[in-house]
Length: 190
View 1 (tube, rainbow, N blue to C red):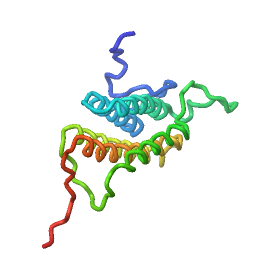
View 2 (tube, rainbow, N blue to C red):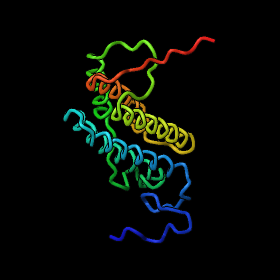
View 3 (spheres, rainbow, N blue to C red):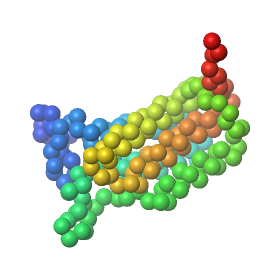
View 4 (cartoon, rainbow, N blue to C red):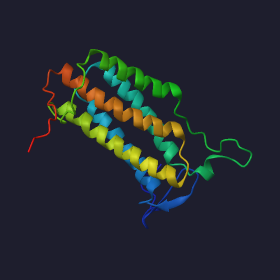
């Protein structure tokens, strides 16, 4: 398979199913942001962190490919007229979301209670988590906007929402594990 096809040279690209849209279409922005997030998760996974986190991050990266495939498919191309699926696209399951919730709860169980917002930073790995969290939130916002225009599979939106929570708690847990400073945001009084 050739990497370059030249079919996008005029500023359009094909979705799964063949529909062509401008490269700036919100659907492209949505799954492009999910792809960007996936790259940041690879960067976090490449850090010197516990193997359990690496295992979970690989699972999440796999699920983000699923979210990307869902977002890259125009709704009218996903189903046949008889109601059967046209394309064999995996789904995000309740269990996928529950895994994130379980991981969040497990990490929170050992962390001190959060009494203030925290400033991103303290350690390079923690900062990567915060960047990924922000990219995840952007992906969620774009997917939500897309959902206002065309229906998006609901579990994809829930997964992105829960994932940003997971990444925030992972940043706190890595701060704890790495014995880095967690700096509370305390607004200045004027």
